[in-house]
Length: 418
Image 1 (tube, rainbow, N blue to C red):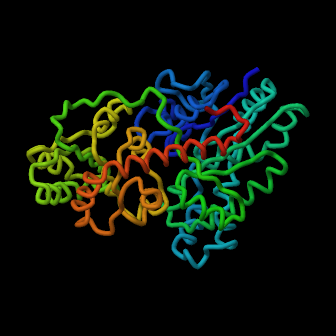
Image 2 (tube, rainbow, N blue to C red):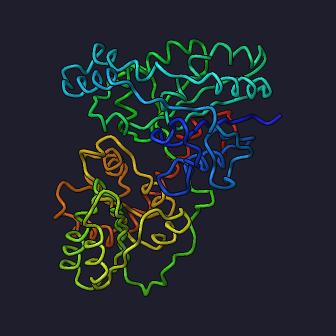
Image 3 (cartoon, one colour):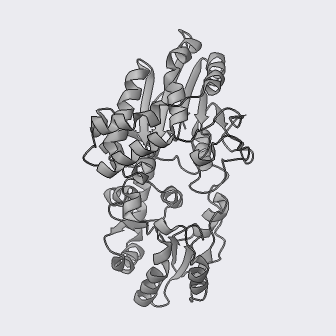
């Protein structure tokens, strides 16, 4: 029997409320369906996705079992919200054991017996199983940890059971929490897992090192595998005339939508008519989005792309780009990654991002692009990438090998990953 990878990804937590029946996993760059497909397609064995209603057949997933009647992420009580707010207001004063204990109930306080029964059934039927949690929301991670002894028993003395919990730092940054809070949660999960083969991971390399230091555990860097799914690279939509193409992803306010027009203006002033541009910008969170979009559409050499595109369509938009610009807010992305970064690297495209963001620091460290401290630096950085393409392409090739090795190491050298 082939080894089984069970991926548990129910969907965004804000829709895991009682009475919600619609699909929550949806195709789109940045949505976790894309990540699940990438990991599933890289696994050389059987794959099972446990989640809410899937949008369609998923590449890389052998079977799907719905959690739409199993998982219910209950609204936090007022007293728990208040306690969490106190911790946030006093951070970093409480960035330690005391503060972590104050928010512990948010992580240890919920589990799903029905999800546990489903997992026990699958583990009992497969002697070689890896349970993979790509986003460590409390109800999924806590359910597995709380039932780890029963799962080991179901695997049997000759069976192999592994647990891989991969998380993003974005949930903690949105609340303004220091990494030590979640690092102490990782330590608690590790202690409760006992002898189980458990490994933690996160997608931002600099944050993996920081969580390792804060928790005393080996937190691995686990990037998204290279593109191999139904959102794989396709032929570019635009038949370019040889003019270098600059792609700017500024879909939401925290991703720089409000700065996109100024960035385009500075680039056009510096490079005259030697470049063409595509700007992805959406209306979410901006009442003035129609005005911004209208102004960009009237700018020469600028194409505007809407948000919410299927990955295949989005990849086709930027596949011929010479450089991809991610003008994200440093405060919102100081420890976070970017799905667009993985897509750009799949095409061998260098990136430009703010220094101080999690993915920006990784870009600078591996020289797969350039970072800036102020937006006025962007035109010169674009010029550098255009004149030094070979150097950046060679760095990206090395990084892609580093990326593939990291994924293999996370699941184990003898695991069934391509």
